[in-house]
Image (tube, rainbow, N blue to C red):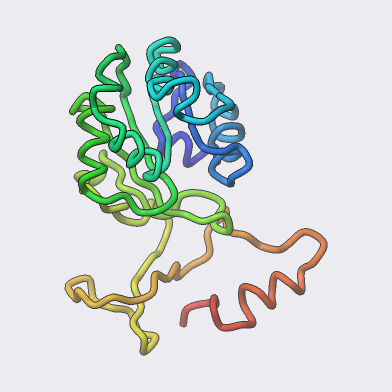
Length: 215
């Protein structure tokens, strides 16, 4: 968590950072608690719905605490978008970096997020990972490649990812055919067992054929 919070979310000790996820979700305790606090960063936490006591409460807090980095889900972005650009426009905040996590974000929501929440100049970092991966595996790192609305980008350094077809062979990058995302090599943060039940881990992730080592 410390490494991805630093390298992907660009969190610095002098920042004020807010991950608006449910703290019980893997993103919540990973990027509300572990990552930012390991970096000595001020981390904002709030209990309550995004429209209580009013629909502008997110931006009110962003202004009050001068938040630098805002981490949320595409679902939240689409909700803010539905409520209208006039709500964030009422508040004076300035995010350096915006991130999304969870389900994919469509280009329209990405563009709205950058324009009306990021002021048109904030970096937008989309991330792909799962509870089992222990951290971000695929993300657009603006320092390494251009941001592409709606795309999570390429594997982070050290992660070997590929798309495999139904025949079990890698699909060429120039091929537009759909396939399965495969992580081809182990990585430090990957899930290695289930506490107290290693056999269940093997049966669930390796023996069933749903997951397994690449050739």
